[in-house]
Image (cartoon, rainbow, N blue to C red; front, side, top):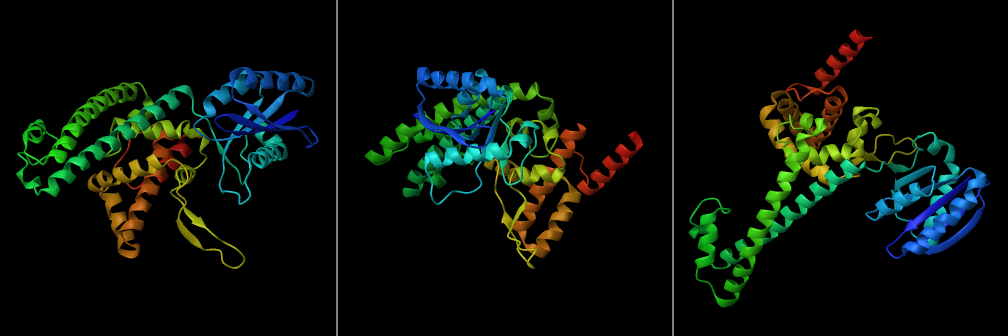
Length: 365
């Protein structure tokens, strides 16, 4: 069998191919023009056929989808997508491709058996529906960020002339405020900027309305999303975003595995006699999920008395920031239980919830 390491870029692929004994038999750059990249993979598939095919490995990036499809098309037996955990001090495309093919060759048996070798953060590519949901929720996040920038620009001009107190309504995002902004007297350049920002505000509102309608449509057809929507503070957007980034919950063996996947567990630097050198959370995984869980904590603490009491005990000892992160981590473990057992959120202690699930499993056995 042959082992293919690929360092992917926009205009070329740097490839490194190893034989069964681990020796490098090919290293070169391949243009990403369709005819050239197809010719390379066709030739590789032909050479690998007598040896039982080939395996491929690539680092995760936004350009992966077409390459993963092409590897499947040309008979790649197993495609491994990994996320690098550290940046090398001496880095070139050729070295990266060689390192990837070496990892693939060393751990070939574990990859073929579907296992996760220690020290490598393997990424499971999303299914087409999950990829669509991720793209849709990421689009909604970008539109919201752009609208926030537009609103901040309007506020800046009003504060410049001390006019915020003159707004006709308490809330800023109303039709009455829009009409007032269109008519208010301002210096020439400020008037020009406001006239340019108002259409952008209107356009972004319309785009967000269309996007949220599409998200609601997808939420109605997904059972996992319906379960997540039972968590206080989670609507269609939050539930679709989190569910699409969790994927199949069965790939997480323990509740803590999901919290670790989203970077909510503390890092450590243990060595020798020092075995409790814990640091801040790792912040690996989806930044969007951590943000959404942080937002959900507000409503969870408001409506779940048991969680609120637990939060207050930690806050008294360690401070509000650490207590809030602890709730986010516990909330991630609750999501694991909800999706694993197909149960909605219950306003109770996760510890008691875990004991109930253990009792349920014992009775079923």
